[in-house]
Figure 1 (cartoon, rainbow, N blue to C red):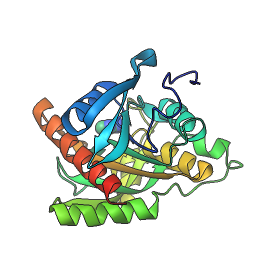
Figure 2: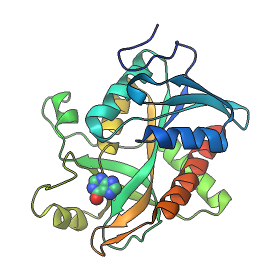
Figure 3: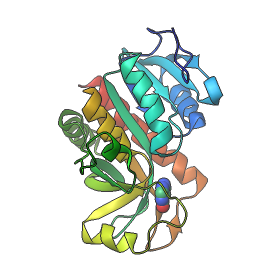
Figure 4: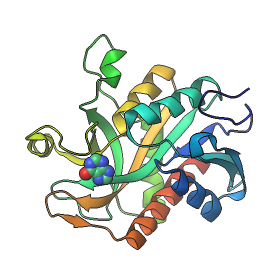
Length: 235
Ligand code: HPA
């Protein structure tokens, strides 16, 4: 059986999935880190690969950009493929005192999306990381001597022309990362009863108008992927 958006057979996807946004990043992570990676899905070119890391089966699959796209894949992974852990590996914009290349472990995801409200009686959901995964990531980062920050992030639906004053609100609430997926993934994971965490490298700084080069982005992503895989292997 497959789903409308994933063509893998049930059983071809591991219970733990790394979710970068970009399917080519999924291929990069699979080729760079996994033993014997096999492509298990390519519907709409949203590539997914299953292989092994330190003996444990892991799938890495693109989730696309934004909550709408990520939620389609995450829902089908949880409901049809029995996935129990999802770690978003990606990049974010930084605000305030974070620096380019910092790695954020997203404790919470606030958002301007209505995605969680639509399923939570129009109330505000506190969309949070799974504590076991978050604690695991903190411990693994310390063991690997990788500096990380446990941080609040904001997932926006508008990459361009977002709400006026948004960045000021974010700074005021000590939110230091902005991207487009985490709050939706966390809300969905809470409803589906699965574990989720987002590990994000700061790829551009919105106050300082700085950006990582393509090579720095790749290095940042590799560092995030290694951290996520080690968390999976040790939990
Ligand atoms: N906004 C939204 N998503 C992002 C950004 C940003 O500034 N940087 C990286 N992902």
